Image 1 (cartoon, rainbow, N blue to C red):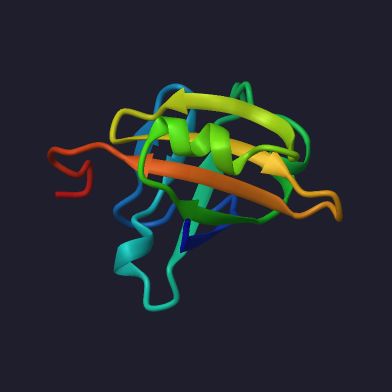
Image 2: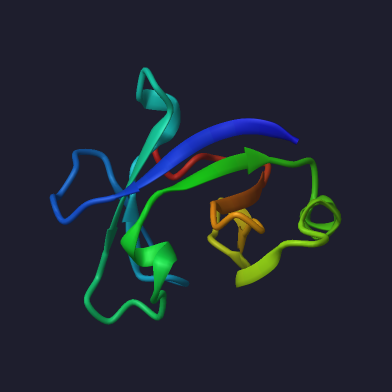
Length: 113
């Protein structure tokens, strides 16, 4: 598991954001940000609710979908792993309340290319 990004919710449109239909959110490419910030702007009808939609999260890259399951052991499931098109991601809460994303990226073209 390796640090990947910090996700911050915003209501502002950000340049270069791509739409993730599964969660109805616009996300920016954290690799283009000098501090690996991923901006998230949720559509009003997004199925994502609660702390994930309202606050920040820390993203960690893992090697596979199976590694998501393994790394999530002991954490509270906030959003089961889902297919974002370019990645598979799941969101979890730690015992002290931190929001964590575990993500594995798919091979192939990036949606920001």
